[in-house]
Every structure is written in structure tokens, then in C-alpha cells.
Image (cartoon, rainbow, N blue to C red; front, side, top):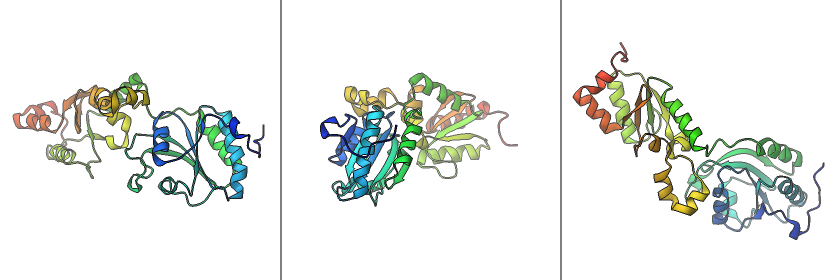
Length: 272
């Protein structure tokens, strides 16, 4: 069925089509459900193409009740518009939130709090409709079920005989502890795989759920449900894994080196 070109009366506006009134407002809505697909619609009352697209967006919201549609008057919400690098209207961003960023909108944090799936400029109703149809049924790569996340993390721990979960990469560590443990492993001639936990918030911090935020607050949520930290019962990174089993962080590994336990554990695995 073709999309209409005339908007419905205001009282028929779908509940999932929400006009945005502030950066805090959009942040709250985007963070309310991290699995939900969102459509950000930037418009202006003086732009003729927006008149047509108002009706298109309304119909998309009606057809897809699970879609969160956020209507943003570009010149009234300048901070939001600039944060999403929108310089012309109408503009459409299809996204899923990938992690909670506080605050969401300073320019330094632009686009770090979500996964951009599609960006459409201009009154292209066909492209917008196809984009929503493509992504609305796609499973979110975020917020996996606890059992699924545990299985994935255990698989990562077994990807090689020695695996280091660290911040950054061995060539470019992103924290001092990661840098030190990489140097230690290199000094012992140990080949290892690594996993950059800064690239995967599910592994780093665990499953984020809006209901948990409301019930226990952010600090308590992080303590209760914290990905690899919870699985290995270890509060920090880096974490070293040998033969699929958690060994410890930097201090533990350093102690093992000092007392000879580490060389025994990696016997036969050094570079000859």
C-alpha cells in the first residue's frame, strides 16, 4: 500500500511518534530500550519537502508500532541537530543505541552512544521505507540474553590457548595496566590472542536494561551485571585467560612470574 502524502489529524498521531523538546528528552527516550530500533526525523516548518515527509513518517510509525520515531525540529533543537551532524532537512537517521553514554550529546561524544544503521538526506520516501523494513525485524546485536552472552564470552576465552582481554590492542594499549601486561607477555616470549573490550560493551559491561536502571540505578546495575567481570568474578581489566580458564589480572600474573608459576603454566607455549 502506498504511503499517504497528507498527515493525519494531530489526535491520530501514533504513540510511538514523539516530538522532541530537549537533549535530555531524546537521551531518555533512546536509552529506555536498548534493543529498540529508532528513527530520528529532522525537519523544519518552512521546508516544503518536510510537509510531504511528515505524512510518510507518521504512516511509518503507524505501520511499525515497535519503531521509536523521534521528530526533531532542527532549528529549535540545535544541540541535537549538530550532535548528529545534520546540515539540511529533511534528514533521517535509523539507529540502535549501543551503550549508555552520559551525557549523550557533547560534541566529543558524537555518535559514540549508538550504532548508525542508515542515514537518508532529502525527501526520499522510498529509501526511508526500505531502510525501516530492512532493520525493523533484524535482531539487535546488543543486550543479549544472559545465557547467550555467557556462551559467547566462554567461546572468546577459548579462541586460543592464551587470550588477553584488554583495553586497546597490543600495539596501542589504552590503559597502563594493559600496557604492562602486554610488555610482560612479550618479555616472556608468549604468543597470545587479544580481545579489545572497549569495542564490545556487552563483554565489557554486560547487558544494560532500562528496567534495571529504574529499579537499582546505574552503579548497582554495573555491579550486578557486568559481562566478563561477573563471569570471572574479577572487577577490572586486563584479564588473562590460559587454556580457557581465567588466571587473573596484572598483579596476579606478575606474582606468578615472580614465583615461577607462570613459566610452568605456559610451558611449551613460548616462542622458540
